[in-house]
Image 1: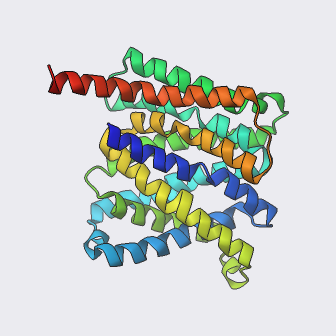
Image 2: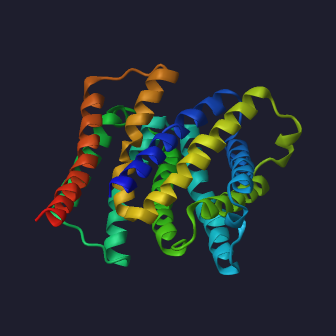
Length: 294
């Protein structure tokens, strides 16, 4: 459990930078499709170099597994990311993140229904703390008049992301995380290049390349790889709960890079999120100690 917690938190820290980087990309004149085109292409290139140096055997994959990665990358990942980026184009990052962070509840319910995962009182209490914390962290989202189209995109991102996390656990089971990350991102890069602006590669600017590389490495290679490892270790539901530290990261990054004010309510929300993450992990430690030291 501890190892899975660490991997999920590393993934959350990396994913937490995405909303900020996308906002910076919009400010630099990039479109959402171009940002994602850059993000996944650079991610694939970085991963290819890593795999060639680390272990070329990680590039081997069966036809069946390749087909599953193609489905996730071309359809599921493309749809989820497109919804998320389009939401950020019309509504604030805080509102988008608030809606997206309904996914731990959805994933837990889907895991219980499809994967027969047992939901106990501790998990329910933990989810309650996490969701309450998210609402406090993004409290200002409730105070704004939200564009309806942007809100629908945010809900679509949350729904598809929930399904994506379950599909990873089911379809990519037994596939090494680095291998899965490479091929899912490869197909996502193809999807966004075809649906985006291929001509953008002909006139890159320094700002665009920098943001693209940052998107590819941080909320790309690092975030996705560690998320896959976390799901492999502890399952989708627990990975979601533990990765809920992401709003805290987004809050801190927004204050640091976008000069957004942080108020006491948001700090209280961050404390609740951390408490919601610590509780199931502490319980697992107690159970483990009782088993090893009866």
